[in-house]
Length: 196
Image (tube, rainbow, N blue to C red; front, side, top):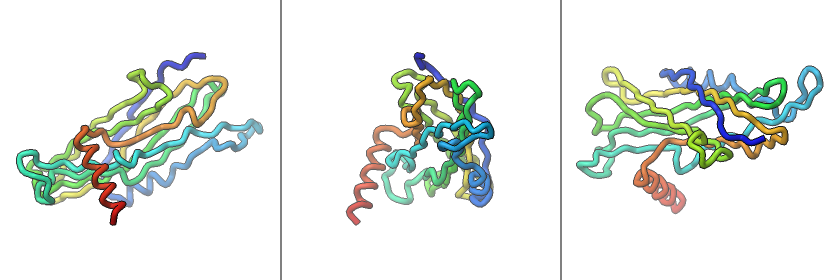
C-alpha cells in the first residue's frame, strides 16, 4: 500500500489565560499505547510528537534598529502540547488531535497591538510531498495595555496507514516557522545558554 497523502483540518484557535489553556490540554492523554480495547484487540500505539528545540521560540526585532531588548517587536514560544489518537475499525487510518499552547508577548518596539506568526506540523514519513508539512498562520490582537497572552490552537490530522503500521514511522514534529536568520539566532541563544 503506497502512502502518498494525508489530511489536516484546523478546528479552532482560542485566546485566554494560561490556566484555562492548560486545563483544556490536561484533559487530553495519549491513547492507544499498546492497550486492549473492549473486544480485547491490541490497540496500536499513537505516533510520537516531538517539539523541535531550535524552533520552539521566535523573537522578532525591529529591523531598522538593532537586537536590544528595546528593539523587540514580539516574542513567541511553544510552552505546552498534547495529543491523542484513534484508529478506524479496519486499521487503515489514524485520526490525531493536537493541542498546542503558545506564550505570545508584545515587545517595546511593537506599536500596533498585534502579533502575527506561523507554526507548522510535519510528518517526515510523507517528505518530500508538500502534504508532508502544513503551516498555520496566527494573528493575536492585544487590547489596552495588555502585552502578554496565552493562545491554544487545535489541529486534527487524518493519516492513512499501511497494514504494517509502525508508530515510529509516523512521528509528528511541531515548531514555529522561522526564517534562516531567526533559526540562526535561536541556535546562537541555545549555545550561549549551554556555556553558562
